[in-house]
Amino acid sequence: MREENILNDLLAAWEETYKKGQLTLWIFFALRDGPKYTDQIRRFVEEASVDTISCEEQSLYRALRKFEHVGVLGHELRPGNKGPDRKYYFLTDLGQELYRRFTERNITVFYTEKIKNLL
Amino acid sequence: MKKYITPPFLGFIATAILLTVAARFCISASLNHYAMKAVIISPLAYAMLMFAAGWWLGSKDAKYLPIYDTGFRFNLTTCIVYLAISYLWFGLGFNSPMEKVSDIQNILVIIWEIAIVIHFFIFLNLRHRRSIKGLDKKDLF
Image (cartoon, rainbow over all chains, first blue to last red; front, top):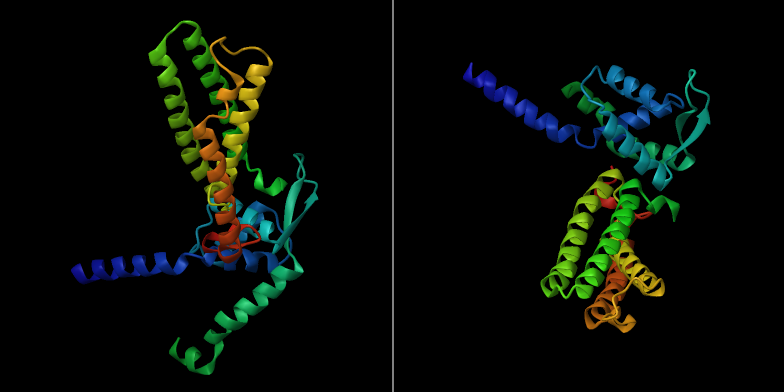
């Protein structure tokens, strides 16, 4: 029982560190899937990550503001349901290229035969 | 430029205007009533409240968008608001007869203005190394 508790603590600590910075990748995944408004991005991230990535509204808005500021995201306004226009975010050419290079260097390594066998 | 004017920063500008008007009023009124303790306390309270407002709204500003400016926007804004309101105060004749317009540019304010110029060069120097498009590299992803 004690070992199980330690294991859970270790897992939680590792996941906490591992998940820092993961939101960026999941936002990029969401927008690779097509332009989306904030709530759609949040739902995509939670569903696609099987609820392993929590997507708090404030964190998401802050991330979108930052990425738009540096030019990796853009947005266009489209009519919302009865309410005001919605901001649909999309990856700019710079964002697409950033995603391509990042995944090439950091994600595709998991698909090598050696690592696949270990997984 | 518009991207650097965040809601917390606008809040700071409004706070700076209110506090500066309040400080000028307190100083002029205290002089008119020969309340010398209040003449000393007013600018000290103003400085402390401005520092607290800058600290609090500065941290909110960083949470809103991590603009890498080493606090320069807040420092410059405080100085501009102080000078603009002070000259306006004298221009509109709200000052006490014991105050002179030359008091606005006292030695502390001159030191402050020199510090702002130094702060600007520090900001320019660090910005190229520590930011991408004006945002802090370490708080971007």
